[in-house]
Image (tube, helix red, strand yellow):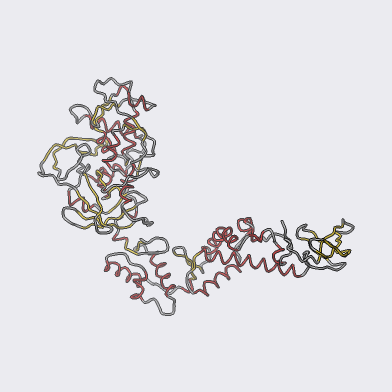
Length: 562
């Protein structure tokens, strides 16, 4: 490398290991914020600190160079003159000067230089006014190798380390205040007392929709001495510290609403929706069962890597966990219908296709569900197994929400779930259903609170999915005249004990020899084969241990999503 020495500030190891935030750095940052008079992003402050250190080191090095003499072929030298040779990283003394000539370059001088006391001597060109790597300004020769790094290169390398250390220093210093990616000085903040926050709450209630701080600022009147940026920062910071307010905005663009107006399920996943089992991809299932997966529309059957088929509408069948929580699946197909939104939760409008009632429903895309349907479920008489369709409307951000009422509502015998000392059991009881539903999914739950408490009480914590499925099959089979159970019925029953997608349930049915498909989604149970597992797709299809004459051999495939 050509250079007296490399600049420490151009080395990643300096910023990663050696750099420490000094009081001088803090004072420098305070000055930057004071001069700007408004909050600053961390990357802006970190960049300024990095450049300050880089430029100060360059200036110090340049002053050091000017105190000595750097060898350059273009310069002329005298005997006894001390020189520093950047290419050799050595100091030497001129001990002789003689004329030189080259047909290509013409006349020049040759200086003889001794290195060290009694050291070897070498000769170098002088007065050679020709292009040469060393014929550059002294500041560049100081670090010629690292000078290839621009200031932007240094900032790009050093900023992450500097930002992390500045962040820690600011957090430990009460003089600094942070909000939403920006830093400000506490002494510059206008006061936002509880009266202002109460007024902000009233403004949002009156508006009936989220508001930006800028929309509230005019009526609040935080003070004329502070800049608008300072007032906005102070208000946003105060709102963020008050649990009444909910920030619905993307990073850098806060939008405020009231938590009291947001369903609790949108703020925190309800206990009944906490997944115990979900599709991972690669599970073996019968190919005809893929249609059942589509009909159920369970968000836990989504696989992030799957290619999502576009759809003009989305259909799903209600499980108990969603019914009790007042939520619905927000599958990848549904989310594709929505504009991309980075917020944790945000509202969309659903319009009842029959009553034209408008619902504000809160989508939680990262969790795969939407909240706020409890009152609507109550109004339409929703049941486990109820079939729901959602389709986009011409109105932006609005979707049609529909169920089909039955023509005549009459009492009938329906499987009914009850919690007793023996756990969760099924009985046949009379009930009436007012909407179209999947009869294989249908399970009446008169005491929903008791079943939800049973789920939350860890009823399945020590039980595997296989054990839960066997319990479901036993309960369902005793109510069937043929002793057969439908795959959807098993899935629906298990979701009264533990939240699961349909694919894990169907995969258990497929791989265990004690279950046999007999057509139309129905399965038979042979307890004598309990514990026998088919390992290959061929055995899962052929089911060689089966003793049933009505066995239906279904091609088995690995699940790759919908």
